[in-house]
Length: 108
Length: 150
Image 1 (cartoon, each protein chain N blue to C red):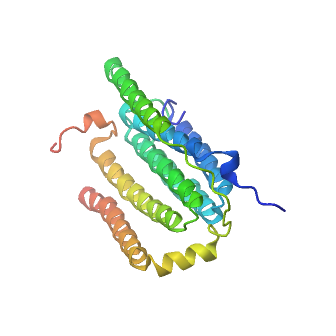
Image 2: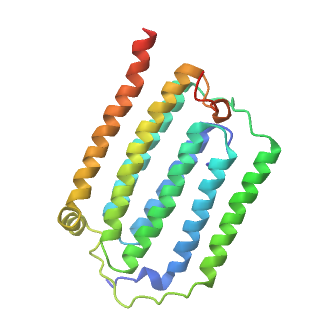
Image 3: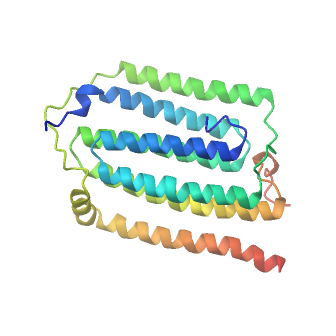
């Protein structure tokens, strides 16, 4: 079986563009919504767009370091989500809302 | 759709679809290990975390009040301009040549493990410390509140 070179079918520019679009959608989500959980999901989307670009260039350059870096990004994202959602649960217990516009003040 | 759907549970489902699409891209790019890890970590762990938090907060219905129209329009304009700028800059960039030959064994577990534990041993250990602190922090954050109310 002959192995097809992916970059002769899908040029790497397309991966750059799809990453840019995904990142912009994540930014839109952060700016657009008031639900804090959805804002977290949008942050995940942005992290994923960067991961996709890292994998694309790692394959392009035949270098495994990029994929190792993606691995670390995933680890950091998982830790961030765990702590962030714990903070959200604590906030929800105190305020009974996760609307970020109601959480402007740090006291009361 | 993740961003725009009104029901948070629906947006979680859409996000899972998006993650599976990204995992498919990883497979296309010969990163098998990362594709599997991506599905396990994101679709398996993180989305379950999101869903259980949503259920804990009982936000299944549309309870969210939306931002005023001015804020919405400015958000759309800001992210649209960001996307336009990114795409415009990247179109100007020189097109990269297609690499002639490709080593397809880069994304295998064996190869990645060698690189991970050889060159990146210290960051690897540091990631484990990060996980430990995140775990302790999450438990502590949710437990302290219980002690206060009880």
